[in-house]
Length: 120
Image (cartoon, rainbow, N blue to C red; front, side):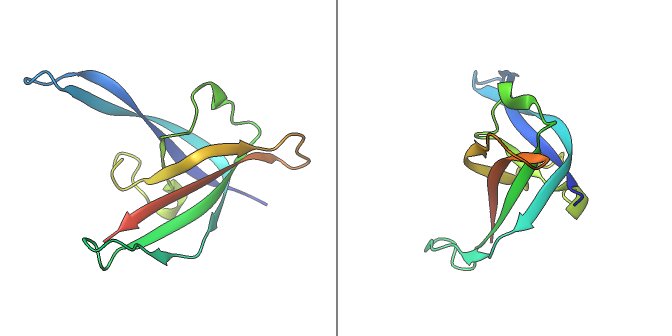
């Protein structure tokens, strides 16, 4: 099996604006060899967004990915190999919950992550 390239985006404080409110920037980290599996799309049940669809993916990160010090919870993921622009954090998929790390793991991929984006 061969994985795809994804870009993990993490938000960090990057100063304050003229009104004293925090300004944020996104740090990018490219991760290669991530297994990407699409999940069944579902309609978003929100009366304010009647035509919205949630696209979800299950990602399996390789054991070589050692960024566990910076957790993926609250991060975003751009599926670069599928044409997503890593500089557009608003379009990137949001990580749902916390990753599941499998130990011991007999395969090359040991960290499972669910991501989703709602369009519409």
